Image (spheres, helix red, strand yellow):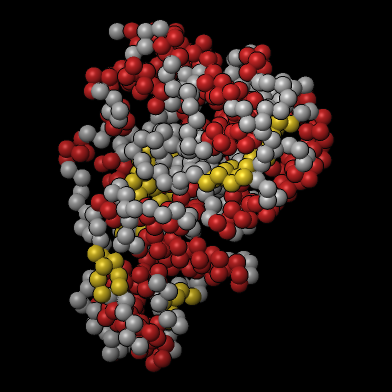
Length: 626
């Protein structure tokens, strides 16, 4: 580890103001980067100078540097408030590999371990201390911080303070006490996703009214967004992974624990190495599966949304959703876990009628008052609009966060544009069926039964209720069963139909009359025919070739793979994730440059002084080994 004296020599005594010399030196010598990206320099200067900051930056945009560098420059210890208890050890390991003195305090530690870290903090032997938010509610923790010198407070995952958000954590509500108790210590709140309303709530609840706001672009151009109609989702997922991401690391999100278990088992049975992750598993299994995901190449985690926040694995090549997310914010946060290294990655989702029905039912039965349910409905409406759009998905996604954008050319609606079609008559047929069942029979049914009536299916349920005698029976033979389900789905998405009760029966809305009696036109999305990947494409999509050939000359691919093998063995020996040793991006640059000396290797982005001293000779040996 780099000695404390080395970092101490970089720091300056007293107020640094806006002088960025020390920050630039830390960036180069500790992290191995020659320059800051985007707003990083201005954010760092704001905090180093003692000012507060609210930072909105996409996953993989470099948020951590925005508090790590100031913590190393300012006198004292940077205190990082994070809800990611399960990941604190990995965060500390990654910093230790850089020569940064880091520690954490949370409920997973034994008393002796906590006492050691506390003593290190008080004596100034730490550069960064990670705390779970619930520990700050303890007076003993506040007393501890009073006994040491705090350089800054970093509030990571700051969206957790929003009660309207997708990942609310009650313990975050008490964090306004940081400003009240330590008014002279600068605070930096960071999140990867927040609408204007969520930003305002963060500022209000954390008392950040005087903070300077930094809002980076929400665009992740390396991610390809795709949403497909749901039809046997397990097989669709297997085909997607097998043809496009064989051997790649990925995350698959499911709504229920049962679905997580079944999907992980299905993938494993079909040759994809996959593990489940959800809150119902015992703590040891969850920890083991998370550790495997971070440390092994090519592992797929199937999870509920309990998994993923704070995961710093840079080479996740895809994020898949088998169920509709509850909000655009949640979807953006989850898909942002793909491609943190900037390489091409995929955000893939299947979506169908049952997703809409299920989400509507969950809102109706949710705890909270009418205002809370209305907010949930608004979240869902925005998510449905993203799914049903015929325009560029990226433009729609960025627009949700208030950022304008042009068609991207790298989403399914740009690559295979869908058609809009006049669905007024089919809509009237569906709505009329629902209306007649209610008026003539006093009955309500779910979507499947409505479709059976429309296509004239004389099954036992239809015959039992004499629904084959209705005037609307068989009036929908012009569309297939799946097409009618798509019509119902889009009517629900447009709030022209509603779902009620435990059985998900369909009912009319106030807007239905406009279609039935007032001539309102209903435009719908027709899914384009998507060609299956060619055999040639399937055979060239192995994980190693896909990743290695990005930004590499063909002659350097073998060298890159040799470096990855060395890194894998080194990481396994040290018991840390491979990216803690070096990121793929750094190994690609090494393979391309082929340095022959330590000084040349030290000029590669991502090779700081500590890593150069620790791994330099080994890397040079790997480059020259036969």
